[in-house]
Length: 91
Image 1: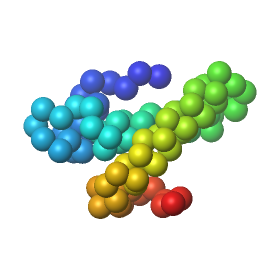
Image 2 (image 1 turned 90 degrees about the horizontal axis):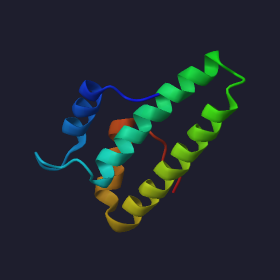
Image 3 (image 1 turned 180 degrees about the vertical axis):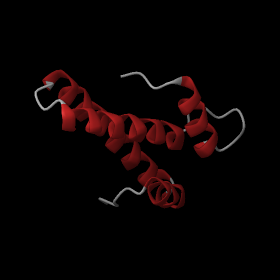
């Protein structure tokens, strides 16, 4: 389930902190959130796809770790990010 490059560029430009920013925590979380959303839709249709379910759990765990890091280091950026993405504050 690879993301197409146009959608990826759009997400990067929306969450980047500078024009050349492609790897900040906010960008990584936004890209993971998009992949999680698409995998969730896939699993609603394909309930027995256990390998994709495992991949989804890994992505969720990775996003959780990045959000925990961001919350610990810069709470304002964290709060802004979860508001933009529509995520819950599990803090």
